[in-house]
Image (cartoon, rainbow, N blue to C red; front, side, top):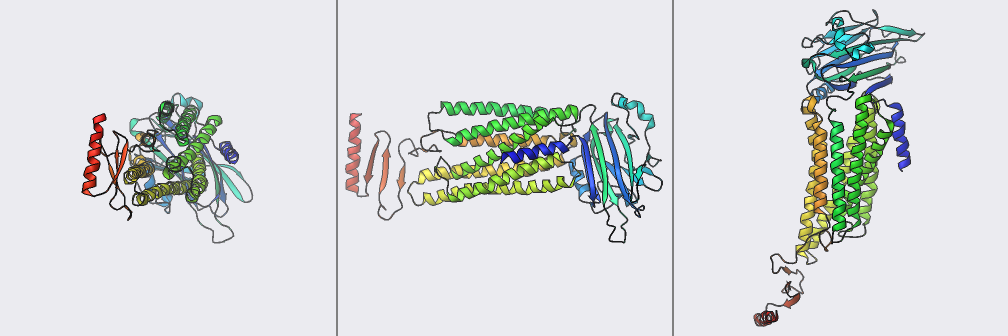
Length: 530
């Protein structure tokens, strides 16, 4: 099972180049492609090169180009994505639906120029047709060469031409020189094709895009800069928590089950996953690309951690080793569903995280991940629901009301914990990410990791080894003296079971008053020997 997954991860890193993006569009019919989204601070730069742009004969009237808009938060970009049916290059005012600052790069194949048009609220960015090596050290020295809006523009270079196609390329560089220009910048490709009436000449588009995004020497977006430290600190916290859990298990005088050790394995896998994730982000920060070894280690531990988490939740939900030592056929079916789904969800997450934003695979696997992840989250609730139902039925039939009610209360708490964990990490965190200002978007990862840690701690506390009675700390008596359990069967309708902890004596008594007084007097007389 792991070998094909390992080969898949290795294959991904052969074609992926991290923050130095290289996207190849082949025979695409989309009119709207989201190429990149990046948070820029002052002294940051963006380099974009479009090459191998293939134009069919007879389509010279088609309009193609790029748009670069600045937004305050990711919610604005989500609003733009909803208007994919519109071609903004043909709008008279050239305004994006968010009404945020935007600059358009419109390709003109007759003049072989790229016209630059800006909205009125677009600040005077420094945009150049080329990028020299010393710009990294002193970008301000090129400020005199910046372009104004609506002035002649970049050169659309014809790379070559054959009997069927023309190939073009152009390149531009943008600098962010002031605090007012900081923001979340989104780069889109727009196609407004003039469709050929001949159905045999179907519209297809092919081109390559190379993008480099740099925040004054840091290749991470402003939304990601705190993440390496965050992941490292959370890794240390999980590692120390794992050591504490092992210490509790070793010092416990109560029964320790296999699932307790599985919970410890889960914590250490989570720690390793975060550690490799932190190292992976560190190399992206300084190099703009992955170091494949660390990236592969991260994804392997991430996949194992995800599978172990769902297995642990299902085992706890079924009461395995705590309530029963053998899984029923119904429980086994849940494992047959959850484990493959969780592996598929992790693979989908790896692919859409590492694929380029503008590729078809990115959006496809993102949708697959969301769907499969929700199915997994729903499936792990069934064992807990079944256990709750079983305990409800048992509390009314087997006479162990106090014990079963205690179990029932614990499982209900666990069910609420799972629902809150899923709801917070899947929905609340996403809403937080798209609504906060771009420089605080990393808070979604902070809250996701904190919520996960709280879930781990509460689960470990609720199901720690604390008593000989599997799983639960059940007292025989409600108060300090005694608890009475009334049976529900017809043969023992008027029978009580009274347990006295002080003398360890169990007495069966009826409701006959004379016999009751006799038994009580004998019980009281026994204290004379204490």
